[in-house]
Length: 122
Image (cartoon, rainbow, N blue to C red; front, top):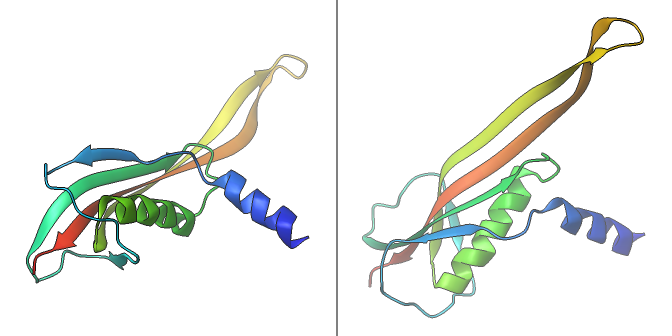
């Protein structure tokens, strides 16, 4: 049962984060990445702007941030500054020819997270 839940959770996470490099500097991968709501006061190098989106809304914010953290670790980031969380809820409306009326469809909620991967300066 645990394995099935684990697989279901993995299926909810969309593939790959987009990476927009902001520096030519290369850093060794890190073991941990701090997740911050605002940029730190300490000096840092912005490494890349990362974005991941799930148009189905199946993934949670936490799953998307975890995916961005994995990407940031690989880039050598010490922290991830969450810049934006977007949620779009849309309802689908369709014409029902059998009843001659408009019918509400299933709502779709997409979610996207954008963050800045940073490396602390010594």
